[in-house]
Length: 140
Image (cartoon, rainbow, N blue to C red):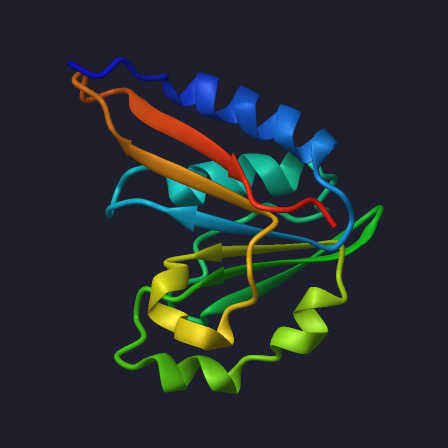
């Protein structure tokens, strides 16, 4: 039996994390389809002050967001067929921004920069709730 958080709980956790992450943080968002990665990313970007609402970047792979601390990027690698496809993204440029969020980082292989924080989302026993695990890798 796994206890979980409703969507409002995920949003609140993302808001707290947004204030704790240093500028230049790389956040990996991991979990199965529908587990809440984009919901968490949207809440994190909003709490970080993104000037435009975040949507899933699955089609374009990456979205740029302006905020008070500088640029933030939301990348979704779900559609990649091969990690080599991730080479086309400007990883160096995105790392110079305030925040880089990466959904499905395992699909980008060695191209994806190492995380400052891993956010793992999953399904709880209640279908309206999600499990959440935060794993700080190394605050820079």
